[in-house]
Image (cartoon, rainbow, N blue to C red; front, side, top):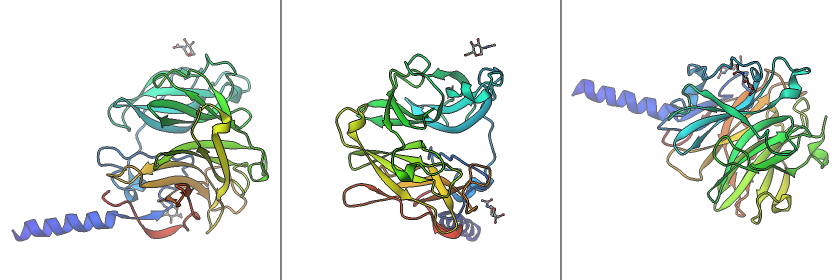
Length: 310
Ligand SMILES: *[C@@H]1O[C@H](CO)[C@@H](O)[C@H](O)[C@H]1NC(C)=O
Ligand SMILES: *[C@@H]1O[C@H](CO)[C@@H](O)[C@H](O)[C@H]1NC(C)=O
């Protein structure tokens, strides 16, 4: 009895402690994406720093064996798929071959994957592409990504490996999107009270003005650029975190619209597109108009209150 209650207290203490986390949650880790599945972040946010790394795929085909950038894992009918960009080791220059590829996993997001195919080659205007993500709206899946003009594109998916079309819904035209170079990239979908939003990153990552904006879907044709309203910058360098961007949204366990975000930022005041970028985790709020509110990037350190019930 004595031993049992000591054990229970020990477990309880672990559970309570696990709710706290320190930022950054992972060092030298850009373009983060996170899902919560079957009781696990890793199992907690704080434990991500020391969680073992799984190699889930290694290409043996030189048509797509270089530079797997910004992979994301998404679920289709109970099976997990990884969407990533990859380039060829033989094309000259290598990066011109950069396209989006899909890997098929299994019933858990961290399992081994097999190659499922390149996506979008059949759609007119096929070109250099990065930062794929999946948006879900009214029963349909859409692939959202950035193209060679560093604009945000959306197209409807027929299952995880077939893209039906592709349109540009955001180009970097405002001053805050053009520091260093005109850039829109790193889209990620979030949903709140019936609204659908895409966050994205603007300006060049090598400038401290790299920041997050939002595309708000206002109804109407989701592939119609005029159905989207852009606002920004909404999340900018602060508190020793520079060039915050390429975020991903993840739910608090057991909730349907209690959102957190992961994003990267660098401690270098000049900004950076390099390995100095670290992964941060923090709460996302929404205002009375149901629009996302990011606040400022949290300072390195903590402890911060983590997700409830993780
Ligand atoms: C990241 O690096 C800093 C500075 O070296 C270190 O204090 C911190 O513990 C590291 N964080 C993680 C999650 O490994
Ligand atoms: C490698 O990928 C290319 C492009 O998808 C394909 O045409 C080729 O058959 C693949 N090679 C092998 C050995 O599988």
